[in-house]
Structures are given as C-alpha cells and as structure tokens.
Length: 163
Image (cartoon, rainbow, N blue to C red):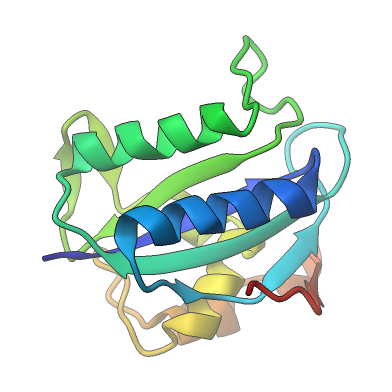
C-alpha cells in the first residue's frame, strides 16, 4: 500500500475543524503520523490566519477514491466551495504525495506543487518526514526546508495536541 501525505488547513472554526478531520482520517485510515500544528497568515487573499499540519498514512484507496474521501470530509465540516478559491474555509484537505507516484493520476497532479511553494506545507512535512525525498526534486524535505525563504512566509508552531 502506498504511503500518502495530506495537508490539512483551516481558518474558520480552526480547532474544531482540524480535530474533527483528524478523527475522521483516523477512523478511515487507522494510525496517522501527525506534524505539529502551525499558524500562518492567509496566503493569496485577505482572511483570518490558518492552522495547518500534515498527516501521513498508508492507504489501499486509489488517488480518485482518496480525493473523493477527502472532499467528503471537507463537506462534513462545512466546507463551502465558491468562485473564490482563496476564500476562508473551515477545512482544506489536499493530497500532497501518493507513494513515489509522479504525474497526472486520475486528473490530479502529483506531487502537489504546494510542497515547494508554501511554508505551511513544507515545514510540517519536513518535521515529520525530514529524510524522505521529494519525488520530483530529489532533495529531502529537510533540505528543501533549509533552502526555503522562511522569512517570507513566517510560521508559528502551536502547542496543539490531538488525543
């Protein structure tokens, strides 16, 4: 079974949304590897700050089925999709990697570009998988984080615990 990394984010009802999403992921996927939770400013639009983390797990779902499941979880926690893709949201779940698969799979581009673009994705990924290598770039997530312009996208690690 492939190992997957999922990015979780929320800037509305942040704590409740992330706790609920982690419960749902655990109920469907079993054991999860969870990063710390980080707070960051909304990127690309005005809005409340986000809480972000990454979760990793093994799955027997294909890419399309996994993405459908993630969309169902978002909807269950009140995610509304509209014309503004940067609008505040209760929950955002994005598939970052699916094993070492690369390319367009079931209409979805893997690995997700967000890994190399956003501190709120790369920092938690580097925390929990520092020696794992980016499927396209080839560098470890720790190396990518060390090279990232961190001052341009400040993060705060929070004392947030999942039970």
